[in-house]
Length: 101
Image 1: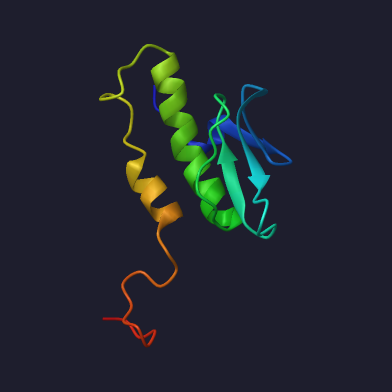
Image 2: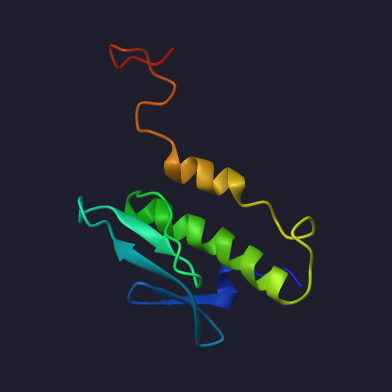
């Protein structure tokens, strides 16, 4: 079963599936305008703005729920691409003077 965004809801900074928390966004300790995704095991992602974190949280939540339902990691959607987007520096793909390559 494919889990789309319609299967999730936000309650504050908690991403819920069927009313149960899956992931939580937390403010970065140094830069409170940035957020991190907190996973059930306590691990937190790299920091990003809230929009990027929410987008990444959807993909990571789908992968976590699919693994929990018995699918292997290979069957679950690869979320590394999303994590790469979240952790990519703002100036990635730009020359030292700030102009695109």
